[in-house]
Image (cartoon, rainbow, N blue to C red):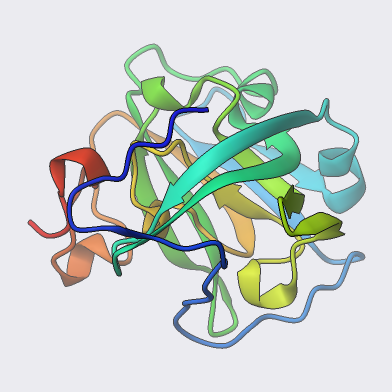
Length: 196
């Protein structure tokens, strides 16, 4: 895999932990994942249903807006494209918002993303990982357990919602959690799109 360090970044072999708010307690019985917005019919998946979806393994590079980059982390998870098979979306849908828990609110955090770049193997809802220093292991609660979205490396990592709870399908782009604080809507590390 290519190792291209975006401008203003430094390489680390660690996976630093940064988040805002409390770490939610996972309860398999009550957890669910909602697909909603510009869809013909909303879909709600239980944890069991979600984890029974086809799995993908992909190695990705991660770039954080706080200037660290970590290369060659391998994740196992469910590709976003698998979730698209479960709903009929309006043909004008061009954007999504991926939601996650924030201080007890399951839709308190969100990250906006264009849909088209997320259709490959590098857009995963992940539950385990490995790298050159670690064998396969579950992501821990601080990293977003039980499921965390990892975006392609063409997006800063804040677009990777932790403790995910749903996807809203949208025709128009709309600011997510950090975007409302002035962060970039597009967040491309290679163009150093940190802030608006």
